[in-house]
Amino acid sequence: MNLGLSEEQAAVRQLARDFVEREIAPHVVAWDRAEEVDRGIVKKLGDIGFLGLTIDEEYGGSGGDHLAYCLVTEELGRGDSSVRGIVSVSLGLVAKTIAAWGGEEQKRRWLPGLTAGEYVGCFGLTEPGTGSDAGSLTTRAVRDGDDYVLNGTKMFITNGTWADVVLLFARSTDAPGHKGVSAFLIPTDTPGLTRRTLHGKLGLRGQATAELVLQDVRVPASAMVGAEGKGFNVAMSALAKGRMSVAAGCVGIAQAALDAAVAYAGEREQFGTPIAHHQLVQELLSDIAVDVDAARLLTWRVADLIDRGEPFAVESSKAKLFASEAAVRAANNALQVFGGYGYIDEYPVGKLLRDARVMTLYEGTSQIQKLLIGRALTGVSAF
Ligand code: FAD
Image (cartoon, rainbow, N blue to C red; front, side):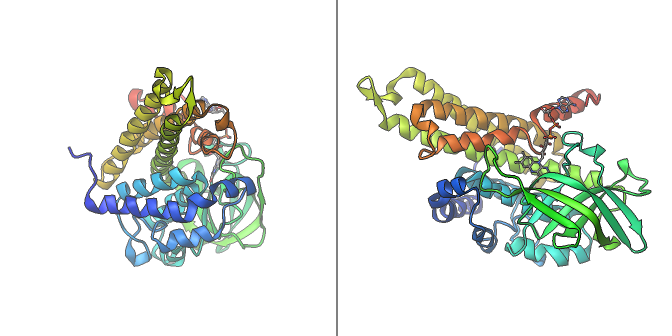
């Protein structure tokens, strides 16, 4: 067993660290206050290769393994979870799914643009009435000659108003497969597709989260990804890998919380001494440090399993469950170290806590991860 990084992996991590210092860190507070990151960041992420990780060079990707993907995701999460989320969705949920499930024409049509940061992708699964119970989605795709006509509403879609293409899940007529859900790649400028930004989020404020409404949206049958009726499998396999990406982002949040808290504890003096000298402050710091390490090791294990071609879905749920809860704890403990200053956005930890909070909700809530793990342990589905 070797838990160290290869030279190449360490170099990728350093590249990501330098990118975050240069392109993200100076703007984090302003983007958060403005509720929008600078859209130019997407092209920069593409230029440096971070939107093409694990994708074949033949399709414009930058290759690399899943550990490299985790290292970059962690660093982006350490810098700004809003930016990290753009990558986790556009690359992690959309491009990687096209690479795994798409036909040759779909790969050539979409992957070069997505990996270059010329296109942004979004993932449309959740609906107003179906979140955890995604399999009960009601958006319909009705076959009409060589086309499908789609009607329905999608909710909470990350990158929604920015995206050029949505990987969208709908119940297609007469589909014989699992729950009759099929996946479609739909350009967002298709007539009948309207989008509305959701404002006032607790965290990830720089990220465009949207509601998508489809009213008689017509797409050719060739827009379907994978076989008809197999769309739920497409969605679940995307989310199994996506959870590793969320977990890596959470490690980044927890690491940022640790770095900030340790530095502050060394500078801030109370009772005539730096607060780092107080045992109860050290307890807060050590709790954060253990959460960081445990979350990172669980996450790296998922990457290792994927790269070795072994089953990883349950481990991905464990990593996402632990890392997301750990990120919330870590950011909250760091805020405690900062005292009242932690409550003001001139200091970084309040934003870390706000950004961490959604991680236990999306791509399957903590309860849903426990049910997935429980089903694997017992063979009983308790949803
Ligand atoms: P509900 O499913 O209504 O759950 C409410 C509560 O009930 C939760 O605590 C849940 O754990 C619990 N619960 C539900 N069922 C059970 C059960 N069987 N047993 C025990 N407890 C249960 N979706 C997308 O498709 N694409 C995106 O890009 C995307 N981005 C998002 C970005 C943000 C900022 C947010 C907030 C959400 C995003 N989502 C996205 C949606 C997200 O995945 C859902 O919010 C999530 O799956 C939970 O669904 P829900 O909000 O409807 O909650």
